[in-house]
Image (cartoon, rainbow, N blue to C red; front, side, top):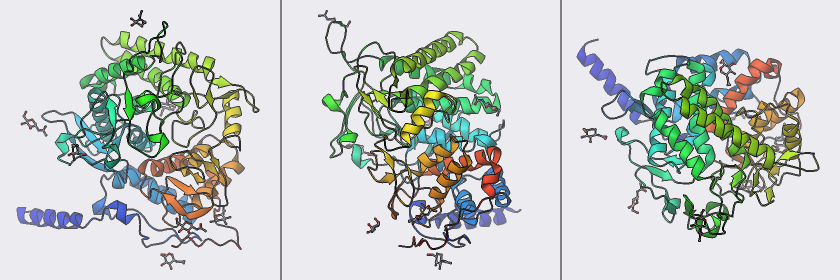
Length: 520
Ligand SMILES: *[C@@H]1O[C@H](CO)[C@@H](O)[C@H](O)[C@H]1NC(C)=O
Ligand SMILES: *[C@@H]1O[C@H](CO)[C@@H](O)[C@H](O)[C@H]1NC(C)=O
Ligand SMILES: *[C@@H]1O[C@H](CO)[C@@H](O)[C@H](O)[C@H]1NC(C)=O
Ligand SMILES: *[C@@H]1O[C@H](CO)[C@@H](O)[C@H](O)[C@H]1NC(C)=O
Ligand SMILES: *[C@@H]1O[C@H](CO)[C@@H](O)[C@H](O)[C@H]1NC(C)=O
Ligand SMILES: *[C@@H]1O[C@H](CO)[C@@H](O)[C@H](O)[C@H]1NC(C)=O
Ligand SMILES: *[C@@H]1O[C@H](CO)[C@@H](O)[C@H](O)[C@H]1NC(C)=O
């Protein structure tokens, strides 16, 4: 092609791109072609020239599943949701200034910021397609960019959960109106941090995405090249510092490495005791977490699912450290801490209940326990999903029965969908994400079909996974563009394809006589 043709083509493409609607708006409208099932689901993929990253492996998977998923509405849901992170959330991809270090800025969806937890999970949707590649167009490159950028974030602000675009991207920082009245120690600047809630699972997420990349590619050399080792050392320092109990043995109040208060009307958005949180007993061996994976404050800071996930991926990532020259001490430090946290969970995190011994959601070490689960991962329900234990584990099975019953204060029931929710969206709001986790942790065909029906029934015609849905009113939902939940739905369908392909041949159409008007 001659220069003028290329120029004209480039011009035409950028003119098209300029017309790309913001996905926040696009996802609030219905788009033809509609699915042919009773739910009449919208098509929700942006036009090809508007997608933020194109992977032929992902597109081929979407096409391949067309002949495997027999129900037209279930297929439409997969077709829209599985590619959603690549289609909409890879806001920028490039290199660190003056370096060959790849960086990937992945937004959570409707908020223009990158969460450590969300971005690790957004990548995990494509784990099954991750293979070694040096190409910048590959899933492997996306992973490397996320790991490098997360390492940078952790090195600059290890107590924060959500971050601004890297300077190299030239993208303007997003304004967080909710955070303007925050008082946080250690302090941060709003040009690099979007929100600074300290959550143990954010650090675990960095380890998770690292291990996922390593295990699929065996590319240990990558981890020796940039800041990964430094970031892991930082993670260990934070974890050890956050094992500090509230009082020293002599009764003096220990200085907390982290405090947070916010001007807010929501109890779950700020911490007791002027930002310290509720007191934590000494000697449990568990790591404190000020906030949960919902970004709500913990009630008792010894948050069991976060400790489970952290222990699991700390142990897994010690294998990476062992491959790196001169890092065997680091690897030992990782395995030792992982094992001691696991022992602490066994000692302090298991309590008696009407369902037998079960895992508590949170404890304080004084004897107070919070018996509940929240949909966000890491949850108790998801313990087998993040590999902490086997789904057949007896204590897990007891816990699962408790969580999926009226014994869990955040188990929502209603005609639309039955699922665990949480205080983030409040009573009545079931989270499809928890339904997805329920399927991932079930071997019972009837349970899986039933729960999947609830998900298909809960999209209000949009064909995307909402954050939460009123269990009694399908038109009342939160977040239309929640990239992680979309990816997780796709991941679950691919898991079913391997484990239970017959379920993907079933019908998910509503039984006759019911009314399904989901149009506003
Ligand atoms: C499907 O939904 C669209 C958008 O609301 C509507 O225009 C169309 O008539 C519906 N089709 C059927 C068969 O209900
Ligand atoms: C990149 O590095 C150059 C040279 O040090 C500096 O002038 C420039 O401001 C840097 N750009 C960014 C985005 O950090
Ligand atoms: C950062 O804080 C300053 C001072 O409060 C404010 O003027 C600015 O708008 C904030 N920037 C962002 C991106 O929130
Ligand atoms: C590592 O990857 C292999 C091959 O994909 C997979 O079978 C195995 O479950 C993974 N290991 C872990 C611990 O996730
Ligand atoms: C109490 O114990 C703490 C922590 O060990 C120590 O820093 C502090 O100096 C002690 N205070 C007194 C009065 O002994
Ligand atoms: C779907 O939700 C409607 C209420 O919106 C309810 O009447 C119906 O029973 C549900 N169908 C299934 C299959 O869950
Ligand atoms: C269902 O939710 C919608 C959207 O919030 C609201 O407008 C409507 O009144 C609700 N319907 C009922 C029956 O509560």
